[in-house]
Amino acid sequence: MVKPDLSVEVGPLRLKNPVMTASGTFGYGLEFLPFLDLAKLGGVVVKGLSPRPRRGNPPERIVETPAGMLNAIGLQNVGVDVFLNEKLPELRKHDTAVVANVFGETVADYVEVCRKLDGAPGLAAIELNVSCPNVEAGGMVFGNDPEALAAVTRACRKATSLPLMVKLSPNATDFVGTALAAEAEGADALSLVNTFVGMVIDVERRRPALANVTGGLSGPAIRPLAVRLTRQVYEAVSIPIVGMGGIMEARDALEFILAGATAVQVGTANFVKPDASVRVVADLESWLADRGIASIRELVGALEVEPRKQT
Image (cartoon, rainbow, N blue to C red; front, side, top):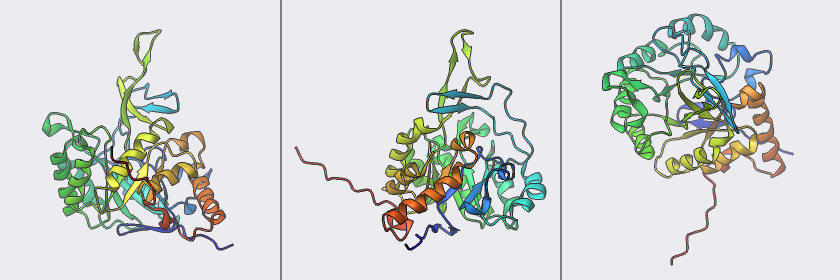
């Protein structure tokens, strides 16, 4: 039996296999070393990085939901300088692509972090988290407005020569429009989707379950929505897509790949099974081998849809 080729290219970013871990669900990667071999992954996307350390929101910050979870961590992180000085040197000892997720409250914040990351030894790419409020625009979320998203993508593209992915917010009214805006301003790839805004209420206390009131919904509950959005964007853009949203096993990943994703990210599953991502890699390889498929690339966008009948 011939071993299938799992390697993919996400624009300039080359991965040994299409499975990465999603930002915010895998720490800085080093926390998971007792549970898995990072070298078995295509890549690791670290927690979002800001210009300075951030404490995040007060508790409660996570609540379980049917088939998922709601989180309002508040982008707690060590800051870009600590990441470069302490986290990245340890991460680059492992044979996997390290992707830095970047966020900010102003365009200048994004640019500052991207410039510091540019050329850092061992860093493979940057992913922009645009699901953040732009304080200069009265709190409008960057990713919900194509013009704001275009501005931050354009600025970051000028600030770094690293491969640049833009992580899209599914809460945008014109989701495809934001994808097109990112592509037009130089994004090498798109990652989608980020979490959906949701709310859980403690009915006994008559209060929100989260201190932040609302949070981001992730997990299997959002997978059908994320797969649909992946297909929509695949049909509209020419740059690669990294799909995510409720991937728990290899078949879930294959849904995104058939819909048009070149690679995927595993997120909430890491809270359930710390080695979930490497299990997805192993099971993808077995699935391809069992069917005699030589390369995972053969399946990207290979969804077969019956033409609609005219009435």
